[in-house]
Image (spheres, rainbow, N blue to C red):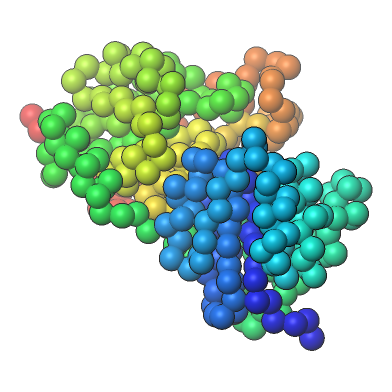
Length: 344
């Protein structure tokens, strides 16, 4: 039987969504190895979220400009297990030079076999959290099947600030707020701003709800552009910090998004989601649960291409219509018994 690990390092340097999806690993490790020191190495701004996981000992913040420092620092800490969920050049180097007795990562290019002691194959069509849990099966885990939870516990202060800001904008506590995350760093993965605006107009006309348009630094102008077509009921908010963004997401009754970071945060915070897919795989991104719906045109021959630039006319996202998304929203609101009443 493999020895019980005493010092474990989880490596997931970026992106925000990937870090969120890795968070459930921590509790499973803690329940199986209660005495172990469990640390998580990631980059800014994702560290703001992962440090909220109560089962971690330490959140380490990696900086590219200090890459040599981190090679020595990881080795100095003498971890006996490295779980490399990132598996790119930087994390492979950190893992290779760590001196850990057990280095674990997903199967892939030949270079990984030179670094990891154990390579794990996982089904890419299963929910990505389950894929990440597969990496733990090389350890002496006591319980099967593995049960998990998100374990990102938001502090009260940013939640209060977000609620007060919405109140100052005219949102009453009895009113329904529907969140939109309409942007993506890869345009191929984004539903058009015009479609988001159309959906918002339908929702506000029908239910007199509020639309909270959320994004990050530098995205304010794009959010304002959508908000201008939704008079009086849209609140654009380009958050400067990840905790601020997360606190606004927590105020939403339901969250409509592209396959992006805010969508993952919404799931982790227990906010129901409707996610719009084209090039990416909804089976791995959206859990098979009643409060998390996904939309994708499965009839397209090129669907799920995983490309970063569309060689055609972006049919995968154009074929998703506002009424289709509205239907998903209504189904979730009905299951929550939260159909907004129109104030006439």
